[in-house]
Length: 234
Length: 384
Image (tube, rainbow over all chains, first blue to last red):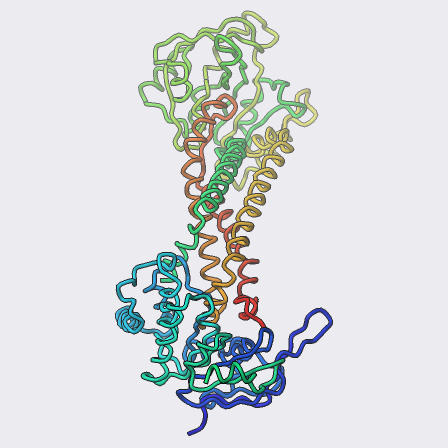
């Protein structure tokens, strides 16, 4: 079976004043269906940039990214937006829920673009909230939920459209240990039980330990992980 | 769902939204009142008939014309009826009680002005009484006059105390008709003048000419004026509208300033709303980046931001329009002597709405542009 994500010779740089700073350099990487990949590396190593590129949030300078056989680097902005809505679920470090919408409405948000009826949307949202054990909090606003609960709502929002893959940027970075464990267990379930492909950026070796694959980035290139952190994870 | 979000976003910062709405409300109120002042200035022009002409002395309105012109004007082709009158300039008790008062050739004048609606029996009573007078409904209400009351005016142009019996009260056919005027028989004035100042008798301030069609107004004016060319009292004949406009021309600069101020008010409130929207969008840049991440395109973001801007301006505009009515009433009571017609026209309401619409749209343009064009990664604040 062909990998779900094929990255070839990917390069990305940013301009800062007159200077061009290379963030990713000639990255080539394959990710298989159902993989739970942890992307690790020091700050500024380019892991979030790589995640952005894989999720279609940013464009590479050169190279290609094929997701499910589609070269997303060739898609226009509007096509990319549509592709994201159908194929990618997002989990952010700071949850990024809309504070004036309830948990139910936050989860419903991505479904607005799907053309589902209100009844169908309600069924999907209820299923997603059940999955994260928050059906009893569906009418609560983010401000009325704990950090862990907010992140679980964010996970429900990420899975409600049944995307091809889920990208998570430091999903436990803002959580206490117990909440982080809960969120990681959920992600493990999504990968193990439901078979979702998950790419997670993390600094936390404990989080990376839950993944079944790990890549280490350093100064924009894939590198061998330092022995200590690698053995800690695996 | 997006509509719900739009409403909730608009009131996320209640104090800021409230103050902005308050600002829009005050601006719309000020704009509406200033526009109404301008309309009030033009009330006489708006009430003018296109079939009526006014003939006056070519040198100035203060110079009279001979009574003998009446028959000559009547003979001009296209002239259906001729009436005449004088500005009387009488004062009721004291000068602050100012109102317009005219001596007119009653029968022809009332025939030429069907917009002054008088009950038939009162009209008859007025026409039969040489010392009778007719007043507008507002004026009668202002001084508590009723038919049969005796009213004494102190003449300024025509000296002496002039006694009148109120015989009729007219009401305007529509809201643009001034209901605060006072008319009495020109014959009463003329006969009195024959006794006290004979050299001022048979002198007319202006003629009102009724034509058969607005199309012949220009040619009739020309014909009338040519009749008296090179006479000792040459005439200037113009449409009633142009005649009224000549008064407004004197205060054109003031009107221009008022209109300019009303525009400045709108520009100021535009800046206030634009600032509110810019602040709101800047604070929510991260949320808009999340929306874009989830696949919402520029169209959805534009709807959210534009909708919020329009909602805030619409609420402010609605409250402002509602508040304009009592404010205009109070204003009219305070300055009723100067603006007998002080009605908020539908045009003013439409202009209020148009101004609010423009403010709502323009204030949203820059924030929309910012939200739509900011790269998602920058919006999420996680480049690295």
